[in-house]
Amino acid sequence: MSFLSLFTCDSVWRLRHKRMIINLIRLLTLIFCGKLLIYILSGPVYESGVVYSEIVRQKVDLFRVQPTYKLSHLSELPDLRKLNWPEPFVSQAPMITRAPHNKSAVLPGSFEPSMSIEQLKLCRKLLQIFSDIMFVNGYGNRFMLAGRTLAGSFHHHDFAPWEDEVSLLVDITIRNRVRELVKKLTPSYSIVPANETDKFFTRSLDTTLNSNVEFSQPVAGRAWSWPYVGISYYVVNKTHVSEFRLTKTDQISWPIGIVFPLHFRPFGPGWYPAPRDPLRFLRTIYGDGIFCKSRPWSHALERPMTVITTRCHSLVYRYPFVFHDVCDEYVGVAKGDMALSMERLVNLPEFPEFSAVHGFCLAAPVENTRAETYFYDYRNE
Image (cartoon, rainbow, N blue to C red; front, side, top):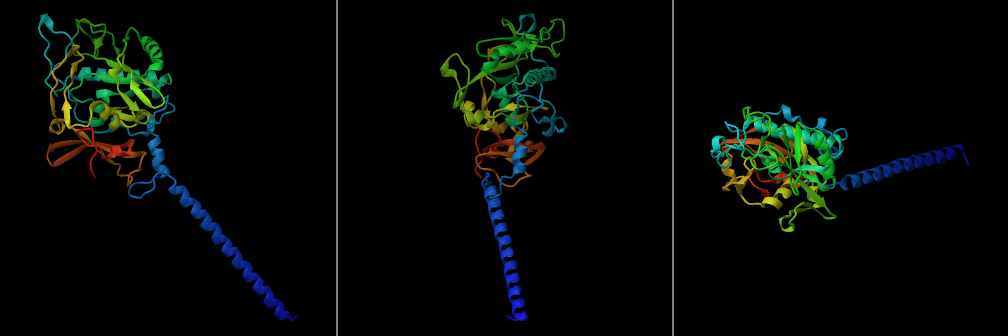
């Protein structure tokens, strides 16, 4: 065989070898890209087709409530104290638990502010103290905003102006422990145990002091004082969470996925544990009607009140409401999962004009991004 023939054979072999390497690289690249595509598509997908990215998932997880402050990520959540807030909606005179000289106490009108500025501050203080007790002792994920307090968070990021109590739900399995922890604050603070709802309040107001101070006032004929935090309890089974009631017919239950895991929600200047799906939680209690109801009970006087109903949107000219939408930072909404929801506290001075008082993104079920502003239903979009 000639030298030229040997050279030609060697060149052909080298060319084929080079092509084999190139094809192998192409094959490995295709395999890698295919596996990457499968990994991406295996996560939840937005309705618009945008992938539910790991970045979104991590930001959502920041809102998940942990047992202690150290394990939670409160410092990474929006600083509510730095936001714009409307002037507090308060009554000009303090609500008193008993009228002087045997006169009848004057109650504020329906949907009118029911607490003075000091009484409002006291409610916030009591809530924060109780929250601190729970988180410091590793029970941060075993209590939550509930009832009309949760409704206030959902609609106003704060108290509904006409409400006069903080309502919480606490795991019934730690009821005795919670009572023991609160009793350690005696005499500055007290807790009155009850079969269903405990009352947590400050030491009683000295009757010689002005009633517009940050102390709870004795309620005639009762063992507790007002303002207070109402602590009800919940029980859990494999499928449902139920508010503890002595009479089963009065018991409200939610599928466990509506409640857990708890996520932080805003309430005034602080973040507090709340049910995972606040909209469905509230719908279970109040239905999805378009009417707002005034408070049925005066907690200051411990007596029933005449309930007035009005279309919720009629209150928009008096008080700001929260508008729920998809967070601007991300396009699309993840199906069947937690998403980042934009919540804007909105003033509506003159329809259709409106102005946002503040806004921020927080974790919420995707369906809550379509929540109606004035009642417990979903927008058709």
